[in-house]
Image (cartoon, rainbow, N blue to C red):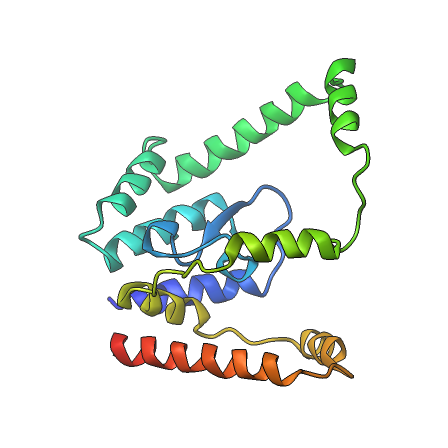
Length: 200
């Protein structure tokens, strides 16, 4: 059996539908294999599909004990059907327990106090300067060949809708890149090409 084909089909189906009712977040490329929390790496699955996805990941990476451990924890409910039933039941009970409950006044006051003086919207130039200064001189570790392979797997079969492409085009319309910015982009692409060459 080609586990990769089945896994890709499961993920592709999840990307192009909406689930009514209880669903679970699933990392397409697991965090233990280099995946992150970006939206492109997360899909919504039914509990049964989530269980199957982890079964397939263990088949694809049989030597990774972290994936095996994750599936073991899910299997504690007694298999995919029992797991799905139990997760839905637990979700219903939590919702019922929280319904009508109010936070203590002190909690609301603490949240309001923390928000005083905060300005919503894009970060100020001062804030951006502080972030830039904190990152100055720091180099991100190069991606491992395994991480690069995982990222390629995560991008398989992904397509942007016409609406998304139009939004991206609209956001870039009229923008003028400085020579310094172009040079930074060229250097970034050169570094990426070097990493890909090392990985392959």
